[in-house]
Amino acid sequence: MDPRIREDDRNLSTKREAHNVIRSCHFRECGNPDPEFLGRIFLTMLHRLTIPALLFLGAFTACAQKPSVVPTNGNPTHYDLSAYPNASDKVTKTDADWRALLSPESYDILRNAGTEEPFTGALLNNHEQGIYVCAACGNPLFSSATKFESGTGWPSFWAPIEADRVIEKTDNTLGISRTEVLCARCGSHLGHVFDDGPKPTGLRYCMNSAALKFVKQ
Ligand SMILES: [Zn+2]
Image (tube, rainbow, N blue to C red; front, side, top):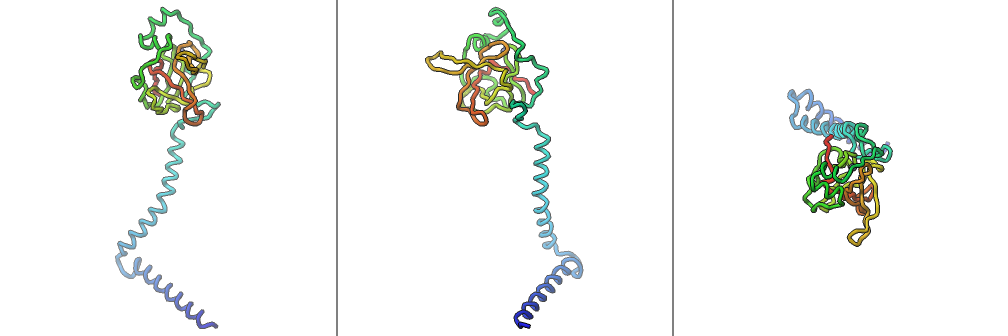
Protein backbone atom coordinates (compact mmCIF):
# COMPACT_ATOMS: atom_id res chain seq x y z
CA MET A 1 0.00 0.00 0.00
CA ASP A 2 1.09 3.49 -0.76
CA PRO A 3 2.71 4.76 2.46
CA ARG A 4 1.14 8.15 1.87
CA ILE A 5 -2.31 6.57 2.18
CA ARG A 6 -1.39 4.97 5.50
CA GLU A 7 -0.06 8.30 6.62
CA ASP A 8 -3.37 9.96 5.63
CA ASP A 9 -5.27 7.22 7.46
CA ARG A 10 -3.21 7.81 10.57
CA ASN A 11 -3.79 11.55 10.37
CA LEU A 12 -7.52 10.98 9.95
CA SER A 13 -7.58 8.51 12.78
CA THR A 14 -5.71 10.93 15.00
CA LYS A 15 -8.15 13.72 14.17
CA ARG A 16 -11.13 11.51 14.97
CA GLU A 17 -9.63 10.49 18.30
CA ALA A 18 -8.94 14.08 19.15
CA HIS A 19 -12.48 14.99 18.24
CA ASN A 20 -13.88 12.18 20.39
CA VAL A 21 -11.75 13.26 23.28
CA ILE A 22 -13.05 16.80 22.93
CA ARG A 23 -16.65 15.56 22.77
CA SER A 24 -16.26 13.24 25.74
CA CYS A 25 -14.49 15.98 27.65
CA HIS A 26 -17.42 18.30 27.07
CA PHE A 27 -20.03 15.80 28.16
CA ARG A 28 -18.59 13.15 30.48
CA GLU A 29 -15.05 12.87 31.71
CA CYS A 30 -14.50 16.47 32.62
CA GLY A 31 -17.40 16.50 35.07
CA ASN A 32 -18.97 19.90 34.52
CA PRO A 33 -19.83 20.66 30.88
CA ASP A 34 -17.81 23.41 29.25
CA PRO A 35 -20.05 26.55 29.46
CA GLU A 36 -18.47 28.05 26.34
CA PHE A 37 -19.13 24.84 24.39
CA LEU A 38 -22.75 24.73 25.61
CA GLY A 39 -23.12 28.38 24.67
CA ARG A 40 -22.00 27.62 21.12
CA ILE A 41 -24.45 24.70 20.96
CA PHE A 42 -27.24 26.94 22.22
CA LEU A 43 -26.47 29.65 19.68
CA THR A 44 -26.32 27.09 16.87
CA MET A 45 -29.68 25.61 17.87
CA LEU A 46 -31.16 29.10 18.23
CA HIS A 47 -29.93 30.05 14.79
CA ARG A 48 -31.35 26.87 13.27
CA LEU A 49 -34.72 27.34 14.96
CA THR A 50 -35.11 31.08 14.53
CA ILE A 51 -35.57 31.19 10.73
CA PRO A 52 -38.21 28.41 10.57
CA ALA A 53 -39.94 29.97 13.58
CA LEU A 54 -40.03 33.39 11.90
CA LEU A 55 -41.28 31.86 8.65
CA PHE A 56 -44.02 30.03 10.53
CA LEU A 57 -44.96 33.15 12.50
CA GLY A 58 -45.03 35.25 9.31
CA ALA A 59 -47.24 32.72 7.52
CA PHE A 60 -49.56 32.52 10.50
CA THR A 61 -49.95 36.26 10.95
CA ALA A 62 -50.34 36.76 7.19
CA CYS A 63 -53.23 34.30 7.24
CA ALA A 64 -54.74 35.81 10.38
CA GLN A 65 -54.74 39.37 9.05
CA LYS A 66 -57.18 40.61 6.51
CA PRO A 67 -55.21 41.32 3.36
CA SER A 68 -55.04 44.96 2.40
CA VAL A 69 -56.26 44.15 -1.07
CA VAL A 70 -58.46 41.23 -1.98
CA PRO A 71 -58.82 40.60 -5.69
CA THR A 72 -62.25 38.95 -5.29
CA ASN A 73 -64.39 40.05 -8.22
CA GLY A 74 -61.65 42.53 -9.00
CA ASN A 75 -62.84 44.73 -6.17
CA PRO A 76 -60.24 46.28 -3.86
CA THR A 77 -62.26 45.63 -0.74
CA HIS A 78 -62.52 42.98 1.91
CA TYR A 79 -65.44 44.61 3.68
CA ASP A 80 -68.96 43.25 3.69
CA LEU A 81 -71.15 45.86 2.02
CA SER A 82 -74.40 43.94 2.43
CA ALA A 83 -75.61 46.33 5.17
CA TYR A 84 -75.14 49.33 2.89
CA PRO A 85 -77.53 50.55 0.21
CA ASN A 86 -76.93 49.38 -3.35
CA ALA A 87 -75.53 51.85 -5.84
CA SER A 88 -78.67 51.31 -7.90
CA ASP A 89 -80.79 52.57 -4.98
CA LYS A 90 -80.93 56.13 -6.32
CA VAL A 91 -81.47 59.09 -4.02
CA THR A 92 -83.24 62.16 -5.34
CA LYS A 93 -83.75 65.27 -3.24
CA THR A 94 -84.54 68.89 -3.92
CA ASP A 95 -81.85 71.50 -3.58
CA ALA A 96 -83.62 72.78 -0.46
CA ASP A 97 -83.49 69.26 1.02
CA TRP A 98 -79.75 69.00 0.40
CA ARG A 99 -79.15 72.41 1.92
CA ALA A 100 -81.07 71.40 5.01
CA LEU A 101 -79.26 68.07 5.24
CA LEU A 102 -75.65 69.08 4.65
CA SER A 103 -73.21 71.44 6.31
CA PRO A 104 -72.51 74.56 4.20
CA GLU A 105 -69.04 73.26 3.30
CA SER A 106 -70.30 69.80 2.33
CA TYR A 107 -73.17 71.32 0.38
CA ASP A 108 -70.80 73.54 -1.59
CA ILE A 109 -68.59 70.58 -2.52
CA LEU A 110 -71.19 67.85 -2.99
CA ARG A 111 -73.98 69.81 -4.66
CA ASN A 112 -72.06 72.72 -6.15
CA ALA A 113 -68.89 70.92 -7.35
CA GLY A 114 -66.73 72.89 -4.94
CA THR A 115 -63.20 72.01 -3.86
CA GLU A 116 -61.86 72.27 -0.35
CA GLU A 117 -58.51 73.89 0.30
CA PRO A 118 -55.64 71.36 0.11
CA PHE A 119 -54.22 70.01 3.39
CA THR A 120 -57.31 71.13 5.30
CA GLY A 121 -59.59 68.09 5.06
CA ALA A 122 -60.37 66.07 8.17
CA LEU A 123 -59.77 62.74 6.42
CA LEU A 124 -56.50 63.60 4.69
CA ASN A 125 -54.35 61.95 7.34
CA ASN A 126 -56.82 59.34 8.47
CA HIS A 127 -55.04 55.96 8.53
CA GLU A 128 -57.70 53.89 10.26
CA GLN A 129 -59.18 50.79 8.65
CA GLY A 130 -62.66 51.31 7.30
CA ILE A 131 -64.98 52.52 4.59
CA TYR A 132 -65.40 56.00 3.18
CA VAL A 133 -69.03 56.66 2.32
CA CYS A 134 -70.73 59.52 0.52
CA ALA A 135 -71.40 62.32 3.02
CA ALA A 136 -74.70 63.00 1.29
CA CYS A 137 -76.25 59.53 0.98
CA GLY A 138 -74.06 56.93 2.73
CA ASN A 139 -73.09 55.10 -0.46
CA PRO A 140 -69.82 53.20 0.19
CA LEU A 141 -67.23 54.75 -2.09
CA PHE A 142 -63.70 53.87 -1.02
CA SER A 143 -61.87 51.46 1.25
CA SER A 144 -58.94 52.35 3.48
CA ALA A 145 -57.19 49.50 1.63
CA THR A 146 -56.75 51.72 -1.41
CA LYS A 147 -55.93 54.99 0.33
CA PHE A 148 -52.43 56.28 -0.29
CA GLU A 149 -50.31 59.35 0.40
CA SER A 150 -50.41 61.35 -2.82
CA GLY A 151 -48.86 64.48 -1.37
CA THR A 152 -51.52 66.59 -3.09
CA GLY A 153 -53.31 67.64 0.08
CA TRP A 154 -56.50 65.70 -0.64
CA PRO A 155 -57.46 62.16 0.40
CA SER A 156 -56.39 59.90 -2.46
CA PHE A 157 -57.39 56.39 -3.44
CA TRP A 158 -56.31 54.17 -6.30
CA ALA A 159 -59.72 52.57 -6.86
CA PRO A 160 -63.34 52.90 -5.74
CA ILE A 161 -64.57 50.21 -3.38
CA GLU A 162 -66.72 48.86 -6.21
CA ALA A 163 -66.63 50.10 -9.77
CA ASP A 164 -70.34 50.92 -9.90
CA ARG A 165 -70.28 53.01 -6.71
CA VAL A 166 -69.02 56.05 -8.61
CA ILE A 167 -69.79 57.71 -11.93
CA GLU A 168 -67.10 59.42 -13.96
CA LYS A 169 -67.72 62.16 -16.48
CA THR A 170 -65.68 64.66 -18.43
CA ASP A 171 -65.32 68.05 -16.76
CA ASN A 172 -64.10 70.94 -18.95
CA THR A 173 -64.35 73.70 -16.37
CA LEU A 174 -61.25 75.79 -15.60
CA GLY A 175 -60.28 75.47 -19.27
CA ILE A 176 -58.83 71.98 -18.85
CA SER A 177 -60.28 68.56 -19.44
CA ARG A 178 -60.55 66.53 -16.28
CA THR A 179 -62.59 63.52 -15.20
CA GLU A 180 -65.09 64.35 -12.50
CA VAL A 181 -66.10 61.65 -9.98
CA LEU A 182 -69.70 61.60 -8.76
CA CYS A 183 -71.57 59.43 -6.31
CA ALA A 184 -73.48 56.87 -8.37
CA ARG A 185 -76.35 56.86 -5.90
CA CYS A 186 -77.12 60.56 -5.34
CA GLY A 187 -75.10 62.27 -8.08
CA SER A 188 -73.09 64.38 -5.64
CA HIS A 189 -69.69 65.71 -6.70
CA LEU A 190 -66.81 63.96 -4.91
CA GLY A 191 -63.65 65.07 -6.71
CA HIS A 192 -61.67 64.09 -9.81
CA VAL A 193 -59.71 61.07 -11.00
CA PHE A 194 -56.29 61.32 -12.64
CA ASP A 195 -54.06 58.76 -14.32
CA ASP A 196 -50.95 59.41 -12.24
CA GLY A 197 -51.77 57.07 -9.34
CA PRO A 198 -49.88 54.07 -8.02
CA LYS A 199 -50.18 50.43 -9.02
CA PRO A 200 -52.18 48.34 -9.54
CA THR A 201 -54.57 50.73 -11.31
CA GLY A 202 -52.34 53.73 -11.95
CA LEU A 203 -55.30 55.92 -10.97
CA ARG A 204 -55.56 58.66 -8.37
CA TYR A 205 -59.03 59.38 -7.08
CA CYS A 206 -58.53 62.84 -5.62
CA MET A 207 -61.38 63.34 -3.18
CA ASN A 208 -62.66 66.09 -0.92
CA SER A 209 -62.75 65.17 2.76
CA ALA A 210 -66.01 67.06 3.18
CA ALA A 211 -67.63 64.86 0.52
CA LEU A 212 -66.88 61.73 2.56
CA LYS A 213 -67.72 60.23 5.90
CA PHE A 214 -65.48 57.60 7.43
CA VAL A 215 -66.95 54.43 8.93
CA LYS A 216 -64.38 52.63 11.05
CA GLN A 217 -64.39 48.84 10.68
ZN1 LIG B 1 -74.11 59.87 -2.52
